[in-house]
Length: 336
Ligand SMILES: Nc1nc2c(ncn2[C@@H]2O[C@H](COP(=O)(O)OP(=O)(O)OP(=O)(O)O)[C@@H](O)[C@H]2O)c(=O)[nH]1
Ligand SMILES: [Mg+2]
Ligand SMILES: [Zn+2]
Image 1 (tube, rainbow, N blue to C red):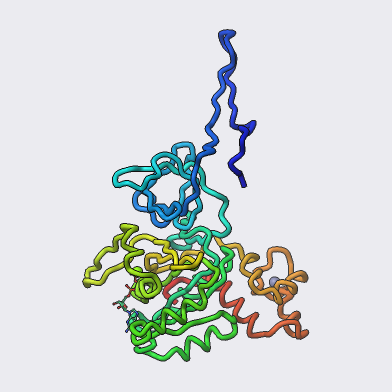
Image 2: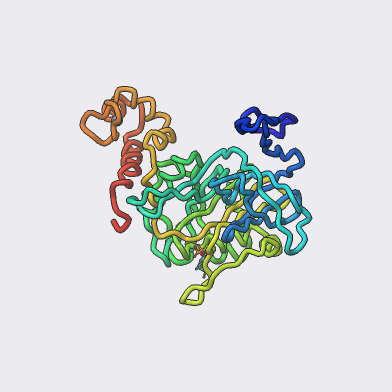
């Protein structure tokens, strides 16, 4: 990672051929030693809302960044007008190295990756127990994206006032994923926020899931309203008159270094870019057993060494079953 060095890097000096015998002209790219660190809270058509210290600043990407896009959760270096006064615009001159990236493609045939969130360390996969009905396939896919991106998953089951969580808990029990169940009543009496907050300490948590499952309702229960207002973030109103989130928004939890990131609802979570070996990494007791696998093993084929590994008692068969279910979610279509 680059630091704010005093000296100019060699590769920043580009000399032009000395055509007319005059002194070589050098183009020295500015090092921006006066740049301030900030965090990208939300992005709206090229305008980035950033938090710098305790100021909210609007910024745009400096041309020198080229095609690299800053996204929500990015730590960035800013220069220019950092006053945060209305109608001022700062420039983002650097995007710091990311500790994690949550990626998805629009669907599995789409090679174009969208980075959803940067630097989150936990992925809260939110599912309603009813209205809308739980979609295990989508949950599985979010889990695979979490493991692939280096985020720890958390299952959040909302609307337990409408349906019980038993069936889903059974389906995900063997994955050993921490979970929280919340209801309308607990949203109102503060119980839901308290319970979820217990899982957020020391972390940056991104909330993902189908539209209407209650991500924004939950994030609002965690973060005081005026916090959200200062970001100028707006939601859209759906055909049915419900508010829906149209862009990701990062919000700090008061009195902590913890962050929550609300994201727009998704219908699908394309996994075209996923590398199975990164998913297995989340199953350490099985990963060890893959040493005996043929090259580029899908871990769901006759020669896979994991069956023998489990039969020898090195790992729980239910974990292998769950891993295979997750890996195979890449081959199945969303509607299954
Ligand atoms: N019954 C019940 N309704 C809930 C609960 N949590 C949220 N809702 C309702 O579910 C609806 C959708 O909530 P949102 O928070 O907007 O859902 P979202 O996941 O942010 O949706 P998108 O922004 O479209 O992705 C709202 O009408 C909420 O009031 C709950 O625990 N129980
Ligand atoms: Mg929302
Ligand atoms: Zn294998």
